Image (cartoon, rainbow, N blue to C red; front, side):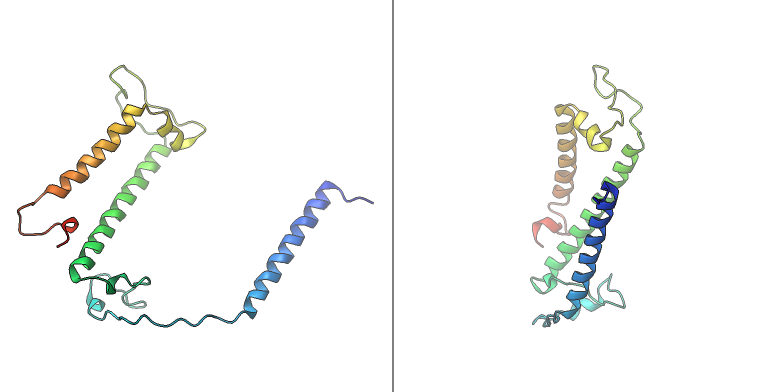
Length: 163
């Protein structure tokens, strides 16, 4: 007797589960790789802001050992800036996903903002005219440029000028 399509699907699923369990059990038989500690240890950074008790100074790639204190500070500031930009982008995505738009028309010709359709937020971006996309990119670029040229002759060096 031939198994039904439902029974065949169950059999295939059961075979995949058994295979996954066997592979999981086989991984326990592999000897663990011994890792050596990096040759350079940065103890001066253990007192920096953000060092947490269970981990201490967490630098799995050893980047802090490469460079000077100014490099470390520049990387820290850059990480904070990128984190803030990512959080703002995520909030913007959530607002768009709720279907919120500006209360005015998108173009001077009176075109309405794209509605949230089947494609979601990426489809809204695709529905924007090319000129609108470039305007957004140029504005963000201007903000980045403006923040870079502040305090050119000031006392505090900016993180992109390398100290």
